[in-house]
Length: 212
Image 1 (cartoon, helix red, strand yellow):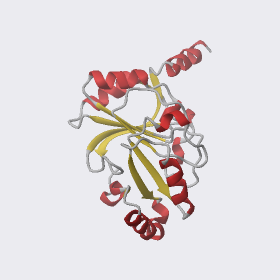
Image 2 (cartoon, one colour; image 1 turned 45 degrees about the horizontal axis):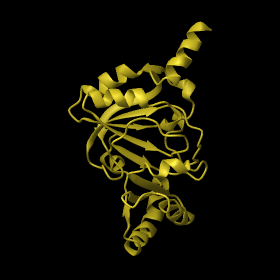
Image 3 (cartoon, rainbow, N blue to C red; image 1 turned 180 degrees about the vertical axis):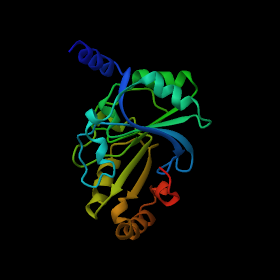
Image 4 (cartoon, one colour; image 1 turned 135 degrees about the horizontal axis):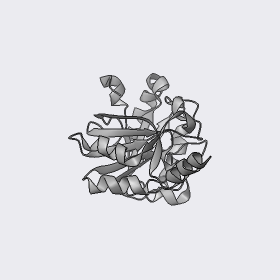
């Protein structure tokens, strides 16, 4: 029981995180697509998108609590000095400590989040990807450098415009087809972006490159 309480305390302080996987790769989506980055996928998500392609990340208890300093040390070994923290839903956790350590090691910090929880940490780039199941907290919109809307059906264009009202004028706007329906939705996205040029098209280029 004492050990369990200690683990909970370390998790609350952000000194440990439930790590699903970590790997060095090429960023495949959004504004930073094509750039090398170290990906850190944390376990735990209650947003529950039916089309999620990493549902194995949802249950945080399946993924070992890992010392934040070890994660930082692993990321520091690679020449690309940027990390992408994703999930699951990373905003569920206290990310102050780990982002401070990344900064101390000269590593840029990027996060991909639904914004369903209060965002903590020091970030160079916030990719906000709102989900209908659990909309972003209002205070997270102003923090977004990039708004990425997954287009699964025609109704998602209206969802995209609704969320675009709340971000800053400097925020980059992206529409990305949900992978399993990309052939059906891509022509609609192309037409929409051509008619509404404030939006950009985002592709999951890592899947075309056959990399993680």
